[in-house]
Structure formats: C-alpha cells, structure tokens
Amino acid sequence: MTPPDQIAAVPRQRVSKLLAPWLERRWPAVMGILNVTPDSFSDGGRFDAPERALAHAKAMIAEGADIIDVGAESTRPYKGATPVDEEEEIRRLRPILRDVVALGAPVSIDTMKGNVARFALDCGAAMLNDVWGLQRDPLMARVAADAAVPVVIMHNREAVDPALDIVRDMAAFFTRSLDIAAKAGIKPENIILDPGIGFGKTPQQSMSALARLKELEVFGYPILVGASRKRFIASVSPSEPDQRLGGSLAAHLLAAQNGAKFIRAHDVAATLQALRVACAIEDLR
Image (cartoon, rainbow, N blue to C red; front, side, top):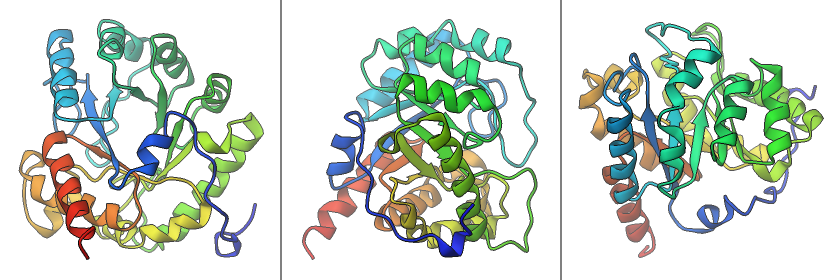
C-alpha cells in the first residue's frame, strides 16, 4: 500500500452519468437526510412511520434536494447507537423505500451491510453510502461493482485518538478502501470520498478535516461532506442538535469553498439557499 505522504496527485476521474450534472454546476449537490430510525442523534423517531418518512422526503425534494439519503440504522458516532441486524434494517426500509424512489429524485441508501444495499438497489436506489468505506462488510464492494452505481466511501475509526493527524489517517484509510474498490471492479467514475465528520474524531479533528479538505483532492475523486448538526459545532457554540443550523451552514459553506461537490444535510432549504447565495456572490468577484 502506498504511504499517504507518497501518493502522487492524480487527474480528476471520469464521472458517471448520474453524478456529472452536479459536478459540472457551480454549487454542490445537496443530499437530504431521511432517517427511518428510532435513535438517530438528531431526528431519531421523527420519521420511522412510513407516512411521515414519505412526507419528509416529499418536502425535501420540494425544497430542492438533489438526492435523498435513506438510512435505517443509526450510526450515531459519539453516543453509542444500538446496532441492528440486516433483517431489521430491511424491515424498516420495506414499507417506504419504493415509495420514496417513486418520488423521482435519486435515492441513496445509507448502510454498511451488503445485503441491505442489494435490497435497496432492487427497490430502485441509485447510490450507496457506506459509513465504513467498504471495510466493514466484504460483500459491499461486490454489490457496488455489480450494480455499477455511485458509492460514497466514508472515513471512520473504531475509536477516537486525539493524538492522530486525522487527515493523514484519512489518507491511509482511503488508500485501503480504494484498493478494495479496484479489486472488486468498482469503476473510478462511481467513487465519492467522505471525510466522515464526527466519526471516530474529536471535535477538533472534525474541524481540522474541514479546514484541510483540499488535501484530499490528491485522490482525484469528488468529495462529500456531512457536517449537519454534528457535535463539533457545540464544542464552539454550546447547543443541542436541533439548534445547530448556523454552525452547519458555516461548515458546509467552507466545505464548498474547499472543493466539496456534495453536501449531506438535514436542513435542505436553508443549505441550498446558503450555497446558491455564496456562489452568486463569488461570481461577482
């Protein structure tokens, strides 16, 4: 494996037909979060009933969401979510996933399990979002390769280590994930990298990852950032998750300025407005 500090800069990879329109426009694509879970850190239990989940997906699309990211297992990075098996995850998805897909916006499935990803793809999902970057379930890379769909490879860690240079750790992690992807036959144009804000990181490391986001451009892949309502915001300005809109917008605007092409957010309308206004102002410089 190539050491992270010896990775040569590579040209931007080709992109899939699904991703191309978003990568060509001036502001990032916005991925709206739909958690059909009882215990997600910010909105657990709000959308676990099928009718509420569908209504929320409709609302986010009306607000301008480019993608709806559906998750049926909480991956709360710092309070210890209760793991669920793949049967339970699929049970939560079954009543709503096809209906969300039928709304017309591309749907991403947020899962670390290959069989759940396969079920979601069979229901019409168009993207995979793996919070363990293809390194938790060996089946995930094969499912992504066979379906030839975009896959978000997110950085994660089993435990926080405040002594780490977190960006160097991300580089090593992504090098391993990309090796897995290549061996499975995932096309480079289908890969998106995500620094995993809040996952296996101290608040300071999450902010460092955002500040140094451009260093990930060495890999040549589009970057997704999901800083929405994350705990690092409260480390700067004490607040509960539903009081962190301002901090979320600040983080996402800086991420966009540093090259992020996808933003994963709870508050779609406010996020999209902020991104478009910032873009309009930048165009006048």
